[in-house]
Length: 173
Image (tube, rainbow, N blue to C red):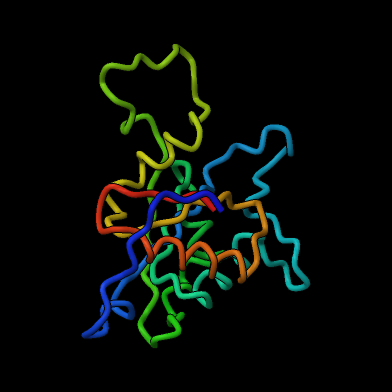
């Protein structure tokens, strides 16, 4: 864990319980080396995709919002795969889990940058985060859709996120 100086969350009046965090899942990759959309391929015993395990584990750890960063035209696939089911999930506190979708396209690229002619491939993690910025105002973790993390990793990440000062701090786990 790499961290900057932390300030514990304010205590009293349920402040810790009221703090929330989002999980941002980068699922817009093209899968060019894999040969397809590995973020949606089923690998579990009932055809579950890896990101379905991440969502389940993150919600179990206490994340209250899931934001999918997807490529244009992918929302129906992600909704059918796990997005619609997420809307029926509850946090450990019994609150509904929010779900949102951000499309990774070139509309979020700053005006000072010229996109190379003919480029269709997304730029990467920072570009993905820029695409989701209007949907995420709370502390957040950003993950790859095709990597497995496990519930203990999400619990550690959430604990770190909720220990940050209200502004100006970040953490890497």
